[in-house]
Length: 396
Image 1 (cartoon, rainbow, N blue to C red):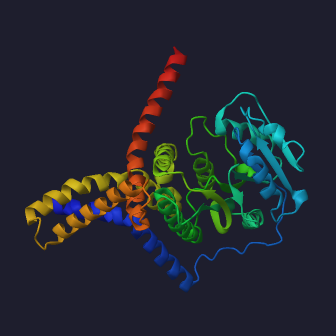
Image 2 (cartoon, rainbow, N blue to C red):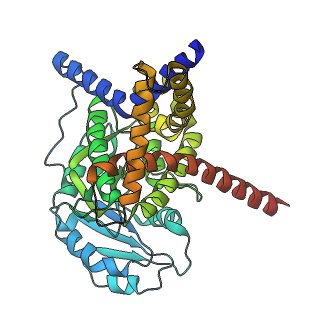
Image 3 (cartoon, rainbow, N blue to C red):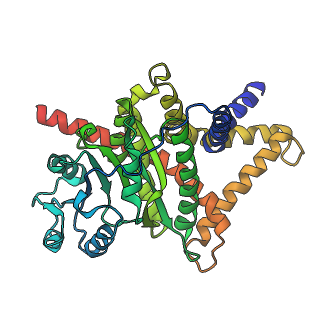
């Protein structure tokens, strides 16, 4: 039983460290560094305003074009220095025609659909500015977002800048909105601290920018293009910085079912990224970046969800051994675990009903987030097997 107790504490440590401990440790390190005045970020130049390209890869986004262009043309950045590029491969709903006539806007269209990554790889050959900013068609940007992102590039060590993804939070939001909104607020805080320590570990696809010269061709089967593009910039020795006031506004998923589908895709992409960026696990080579990457991303996409699953039988056995209604520490943890999953189950039960208790959506969203990692792992395995089968088929 002693070995089971040791296992419990190891599992609990990994879980707590992943979701709470890393944030606490990060905050403490930053406070100490500020007190000792260590590693202060080089001030950015507010007058730094080079030519930039706003890059939008779109497929059948006709319903968003007018709002997106209205928002883009209202951004606070010199109009003669802001070039707008739309790549609309495969669109057959009139999106390319609707974009004609807008100032400083270039549309590159192919009838053949090659996916978002194919459109990005093809479209980058048309970007001639030193900085390229990626954004989605269905997101609106804050008025000063471009200006604030670009200013950070005045520091030559900065190779990528991530904006903030903001979720529209309404009182009527279902579990996906309540949970996702809180999750992104916490994520934004961690990103701000990550950037202050050294570098953000991954950019939000809704709004991020890189030095054009650092763009690397992205593999066609890549799931998280934004994550791969930004982390490869970090691999090259540059930092990824973050400005929460450079933001993209997006509505939450319609319901938790849609959110689960999105999270499964992200989790599969996270596992794929860990495999492709395995050199970043070498703390002797990448130092602080590896520490941040493992703590903030790798654990969430690999070990921690498994620890949560293993904790269920481990705690059950320990609680039974101690007595289910005793006042032992392990029994207390057992009932806390039962209460948490009961709250998640109740959140699921109330999700599509008129009675909505937002506090219950938090454990439900947490449960969905970790479930998606497990399901995402199987999706990644299936996709990998399919790709390998196609390759072997072509080779034969």
